[in-house]
Image (cartoon, helix red, strand yellow):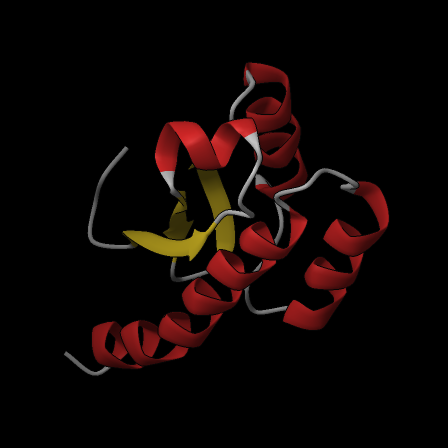
Length: 110
């Protein structure tokens, strides 16, 4: 799967205190593998306290495109994810969204 056009991105955010996820991990990691030629998210993973929540977030992100309006993806998360880690997921995703243009620019011009 890894080739010159796939890049792994990660973002981290503190989880809310008093949650199981916070007790287990302290911070949430969001990891995406992105095809930088298309911007499409190929794979996603995150650290949440249940596999169901992890699978939900993964399914939500895989297939989305970072070249499209990122605020639409964040709005979608706000709408459909009502767990305690919502803010952490969005914060970690924003970190990745902020990193993405610089990597695409570097890869295209190298």
